Image 1 (cartoon, rainbow, N blue to C red):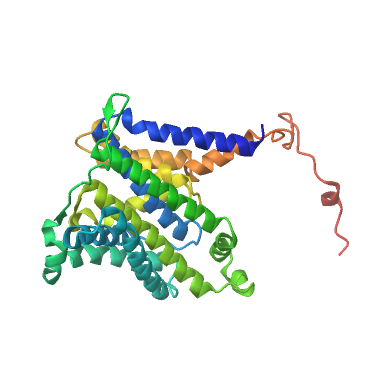
Image 2: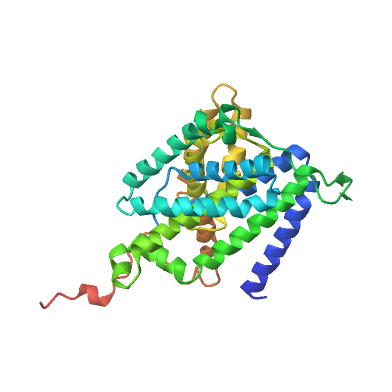
Amino acid sequence: MNKQRILWIGMALLLVAALVLPFLVKNYRVFQFNLVLVYAVAILGLNILTGFNGQISLGHGAFYAIGAYAAAILMDRVGMPYWLTLPFSGVLCFVLGFLMGFPALRLAGHYLAVATLALALAIPQLLKYKHLEEYTGGVQGIVLVKPDPPFTFRFLDQPLSADRWLYFFTLAVTIVMFVLAWNLLRGRVGRALIAIRDHPIAAAAMGINLPMFKSLTFGVSAAFTGVAGALGAVVIAFVSPDSFTVALSIFLLVGVVVGGLASIPGAFFGAMFIQFVPNIADELSKSAPAAIYGFLLILLMYLMPLGVMGMVRKLWARWQPGAARSQLNVKPGTSLPVPPDLTKESTT
């Protein structure tokens, strides 16, 4: 059986498990899994910018907030169906991210991080602005109603509740977003982004339009995060400015690092970390959950410095047939063989 067939069988089994999962747990756990899928889309968007293009952003929580509020306002004020708000939020965040990409062209590294951090600080305050309270609800936010499932049935003696329906809806959107990212990054665009990240001067010499690619990458990344924000608003059924603080942007960056830079599947591992580890830390210590969370994060970075997917790639390469034969079999106490060319004196 070839590797491609094994991969497809594994993906099919994983999809079946994902479809059965919401009927094996209670509604609260289903709600948590919904947030895992939402965060996975947001982390994927940030990873496109940071992992594949090398631009560090501490402001993606702002795009998440914009997407969430766009969906909430369209649902609450206009009466738009929840599923139709997703493309509107994505397009809006794409335009804002693309415009944000132009001033970011002159910034790099920690300078860009500070500039995007200013965006994350400004958006929650802007949402509280008194002249926008008519639309944003001010500090009170906007309360939404979770959509009812379009049909009902029972499976494993569990009904199709609103949370379970939203799980299937969020899962479908997540699959679409991940397929779009995979198709975008596996071809010429992905190679161009990596070339810009690793060797920008060489990429420009090869004819890659650096300003346009960087701006488009910022826009696409913001669009993914905006769609995630809209999904989050639908799943939680509530938005408020205090839900989108700077901590959200930092958590998304933590998810990127934990899952693995420049890794598409790593977004799921990062999302599970930022969703479940704080709860685990709170259960271990009611007095200092942040300290437990920090310790677990440091421990994970020590054990897996390249993230979860970096460790998976390393183990996969080690278990490949012939990997052991490619390494030198040197007994303890003996010296490594030196190539003959290195023992010759230079004649120049």
